[in-house]
Length: 233
Ligand code: ADE
Figure 1 (cartoon, rainbow, N blue to C red):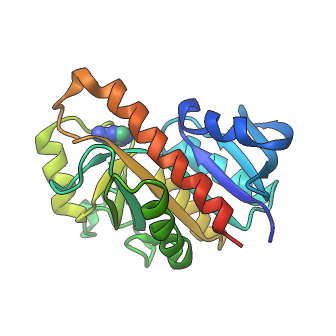
Figure 2 (spheres, rainbow, N blue to C red):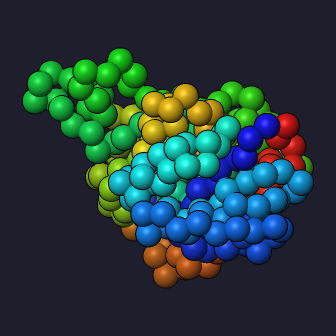
Figure 3 (tube, helix red, strand yellow):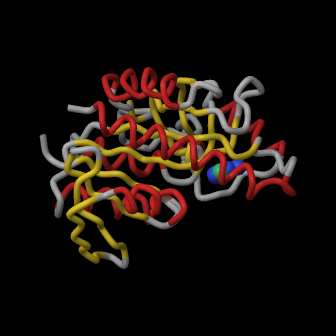
């Protein structure tokens, strides 16, 4: 198997994984540092993409072209779009879509990319099933869900915006990179999985505790990513 690409948008989401790697070689491209090395006995390329869909898409394309990765995992945090999904819980992507794509003026449904058949980009089933069982082992104290993840260039902290995204997408979680990564991986025929731990309710509530929730969520997502790497063959 070739290397597995692991993308986190923020340094906190990848620094733990970088620390655990051996035989590291760093290559800088498009202002991003790609850490090639070994994690849990597997060849990996770990990279911080930066926040937002453009950074994430550029990063994914470099993983495809320069590192020829065989699979891509996106680890990080997200806002919950479902009352049953609590802060700290994990959502694994069944599929991802762009909640801010809007060609409704041409008669397309909200989120549909014009002149493209796909409404959303499906995550890899085997990676998701493996992640599900690994998550129950390594994060037994939290719930894990399988569902759609919606991405946009927007931090969602307003209840009306949140409700609109739920109505348009039926997604379980909202964040700012997963769809760009899944979309780019799909175009390159690379299997992918988005793993997101919930840091907030995407409605502006509990803002005071955000950094504490964020740290806990990152911990869960990183622990699962490491466990998943160990299991993928
Ligand atoms: N990442 C974590 N929480 C988020 C939110 N509420 N909106 C967008 N991205 C997020």
